[in-house]
Length: 102
Image (cartoon, rainbow, N blue to C red; front, side):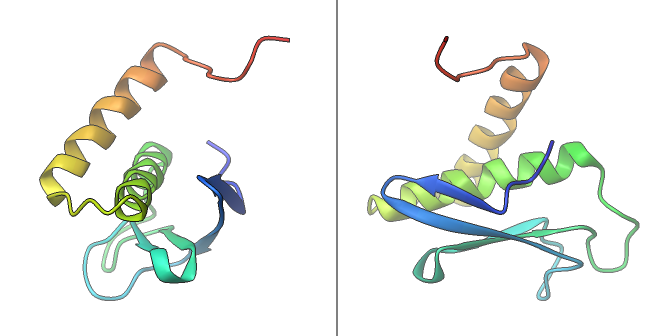
């Protein structure tokens, strides 16, 4: 997956930054709603480079967090992880493309 430099989420333009590692734990990605940024790691501290599928699912995970937080929902991490993993699997394995038909 090509990781975009920015995403439009709701009415906001969210910067997506590729970083080598995210400090503070074994994080693949991290959202900062107040700063309109999502950081996406290339590797977890103390490990090899992350596979493309983990990076893509991590980005989807943080997009879900951003949407929910912007709408005032404090959702449990386990629920966000389940949604991200399930949606990622369905989209990827079925080659779904949600763009408008031309």
